[in-house]
Image (cartoon, rainbow, N blue to C red):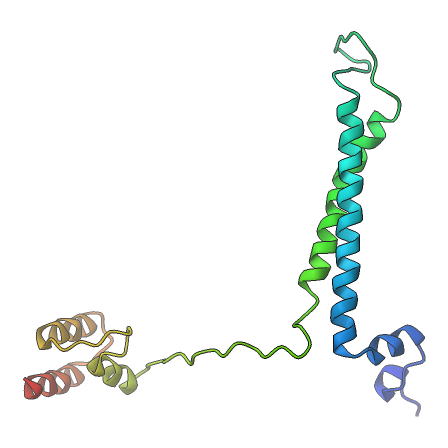
Length: 170
């Protein structure tokens, strides 16, 4: 039984092989340059089309509108060419945004986020780390502990143990 080329790892498609052969750095710079060119050409085309429409001035061609002069030939074509020019320009910016990380760039370190669940939540609460606050006031700790019990986050036994621990620290 012969396997299809996508399962063999051997592709007969030259474009797929060429795309996979490019190093990451080349892809990054190629996407940057290509996206920039697409965006700049589309912007230039849009501005030129807008110039052509504005140059025509106030005009009307048929219908209920009465104007002293007819619109120049090609005004309708320029009017319908502007939205696609914007979309093509946005696709160039999309290509730039999807280029990936700069080759050789070190990713920014991400601080680990503390997640407290179950008994860890109670311990984190008592140590004041649950919301990034260091609480030294035992009254405030007791009030927060009661709020946790009222919300159903703590059972009556957990509440009593934590309350005794806070009172023992006073």
